[in-house]
Amino acid sequence: MASIEIASGWIDAVQRYVDGLMVDSILAAENATQFFHEQVVARAREDEQWASLADNIEVWSQDGRLVIGVQNPLFASQAMLLEYGDLEAPPNPLFRTLTSATRDAAQHMQDEIDSKYGPRMDVGGPKIEGVLRAG
Image 1 (cartoon, rainbow, N blue to C red):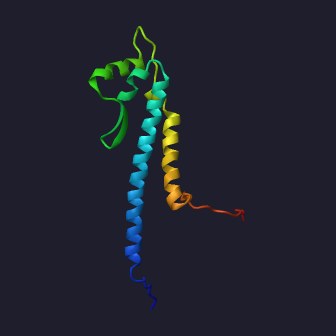
Image 2: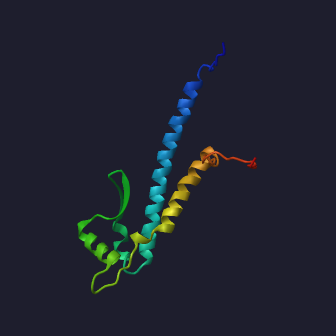
Image 3: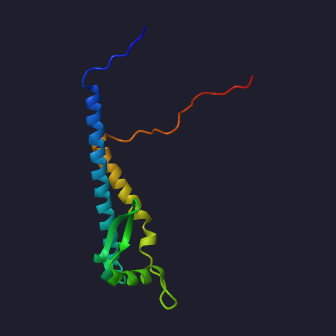
């Protein structure tokens, strides 16, 4: 009969590692969110039309998703007008053009995790090497 023995304390060590990974992941996500917010605010400050609203740009969680925008009712309609324009003013989108800021924030988070746990491993599908031969 075959058996597998697990050293005492091994399960506790794995649990501590997982707990630490969860804490570090949450911290990295919070740091990436702050980094993202700072990038968007800086970009708004560089735009003449958005500069006056820059300090009112916020990040919040809504229905489990992160949202960035202007919540203050005193400035929300102005932000909406800038973002989408109207019959008299062309749009000057800020929030709909954040591809690079989003990518930078994701990289910021990945770099933080990598600095603690090493580079991520490719855990995609199985790699099959070799040559198939027909009979």
